[in-house]
Each structure stands twice: as structure tokens, then as C-alpha cells.
Amino acid sequence: MSPNCDARQAGLIDHLVLHYTGMTSAEAAIARLCDAASNVSAHYVIDEDGAVHCLVDERMRAWHAGVSYWRGVRALNDRSIGIEIVNPGHEFGYRPFPPVQMQAVLEVCQGILARHAIPARNIVAHSDIAPDRKQDPGELFPWAWLAAQRVGLWSDALGVAGDVRDDLGAIGYDVTLPMPLVIAAFQRRFAPHRVDGVEDERTAARARAVAALLTGGC
Image 1 (cartoon, rainbow, N blue to C red):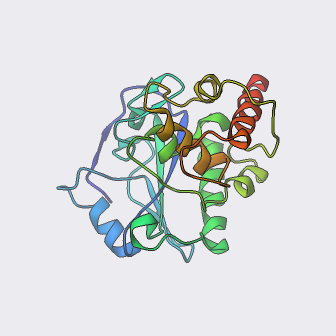
Image 2: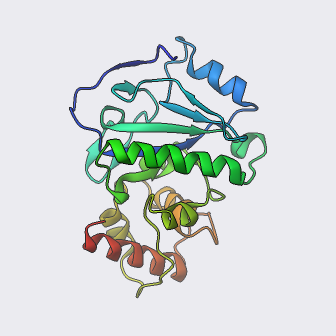
């Protein structure tokens, strides 16, 4: 178990944040998350072979999100559960997430959603809530597959491109940050045909379609 946790203050859990470990091995990641000097942790770590490690009780606040924002809420540690998914990340050889690992991710997420009322719009990437600092779990993460299993939000649709800043704000992003960073975060999540922070027509059209999903109360 990790010592890097404390009592929740918000009294509710309504966000689920997915990360990648971004380290050379699962062992190295778990050691860091359990090191009191690191001041970081997560509730779960899921290895590439599907092994699930629980490091912090869900009733406690794990220190995984850091400086963060989503749909008007800041400091998301207090009201979220964090899952670290083992992957070397962009620094150490980013690669696809194995099916056995994703099946374990799905089952852990389903268990969390059975215990807590977390809406689909609040199942987010670390890069969604901290686009100026984070890239994980990245553009290779299979969000569409996960959403097809009723975990999270996805749209293959393309709307009529509008004001991308307004649409990204409606989705939940902090649009007070530099827009290329916010657009890149959106691309990693919903439009991985490019991940460069450039607003092309396809990115803007996908942003409009995802924003439209939220009018249905997702």
C-alpha cells in the first residue's frame, strides 16, 4: 500500500482519471508510487499482463492528479479515483496497450462505476485535466473500445465545425490555458489523426460532435 494518501474532503467521488505510468517497468512505477518521498500515488496500478495492484483504498484521497481542472472543478484528487496503466510512455518507448491489460482496465473501471456515481463525461485522461503538463495515457489508448463497453465517452461523428475554443470548454477543458496545448490534449483523446495542437477542420468538427454529446446528459 502507498503512504501517499489522506482523507477526502469533498464527500463524493464523481471523477475517474486514467494515467499511464511512463516508467521503464511496473516494478519501478509501483516503487515510486509507494515511496513516501515521491508524494505521488494512485488507487490502482494495472500491469501489461493484466495484474491489478491496489495501492490506496478508494475511500482515501490518492495523490495522482496534481494541479488539475475539469468542467469547472479544480484539484481533482479530492473527488476522483486514479488508475495507473503500465506503459513506458512517450519518454521510454510508447506502445499499444495489450488486450489482456485493457480487459483488466475495463473490469476495474466497471467495479468502480458500480460503487460510485461517475458520469461518462467525467471519465478522463490525465492529459484532459492537465494539458499543460501531461500526455497520458496518450493517443494509442483505446478510448473508443472502452466507451463501447459503456465506460467513458466517445463519438465517431463529425459535426459542423464551429468555435473550437467554445466546444472544448463545453466538453470540460480549461480553455484559459494556451490553446495549442488544449487542442493537443483533445486530439490525443478524441482525434488522434494528428496530435500537434493544430486546429484543422477534422479536429474542430470532432470537437463539435463531442460537445453535442453532452447535451444528452452524458
